[in-house]
Image 1 (cartoon, rainbow, N blue to C red):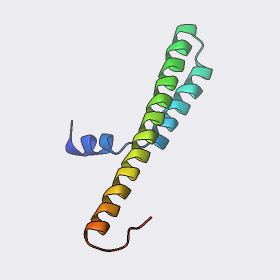
Image 2: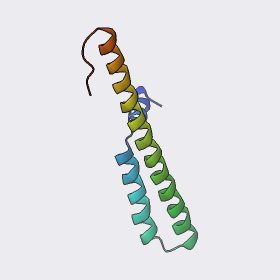
Image 3: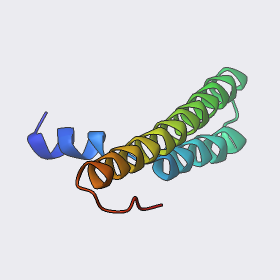
Image 4: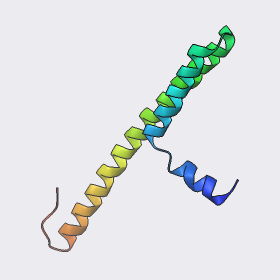
Length: 82
């Protein structure tokens, strides 16, 4: 795996995961074989779950960054930003 591939994988967003889920659902609707439809439905659900987890992590990361900025401002004697 190339470094670009690794970097790209690390930057996947919740929006991209939701797009993958939509692609699975579209393929599921077109699949004539019940087992394939079931597998694609499962894949779509898992992509959606990953998108949800990624969104929660992004929110938590933003909160943590805000707390750190506020602490740095307070330590420097400057007013805290909101």
